[in-house]
Amino acid sequence: MRLFEALFDAATETQVDAVLKRHAEILHVASNWHPLDGNESNFGVVENQQSSPIASLIEKITNSIDAILMRRCYEAGIEPTSAAAPRTMEAAIKAFFHKDSGSW
Image (cartoon, rainbow, N blue to C red; front, side, top):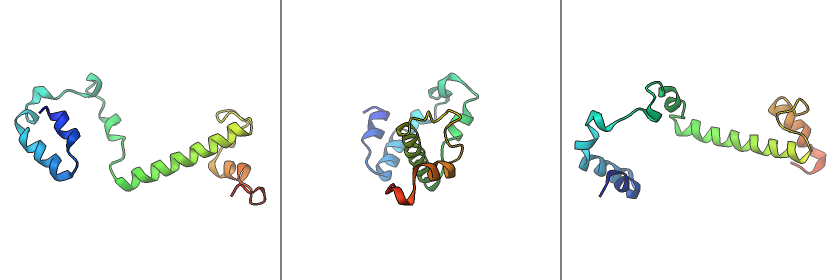
């Protein structure tokens, strides 16, 4: 079985470890590895991803809040990137979520 397929089918960390050990001979051959997009300077693109599961979860929550606030802009007829849009999350929350409007 090819390495990708074996890793794809691995359901647990233990199974991934076993696959990597079975294919160690091809993983340690330098010519099998190429820079992302053929660019030696792409380390920043890869390193920019979250290394911590907590930070990744927080980013997902923040992104979902951003999406809700953008939707509220569109619902109000405001282009989110325009000067008419709230400039901060706090301003957007105040503009689109009022205690007395039932939007809580």
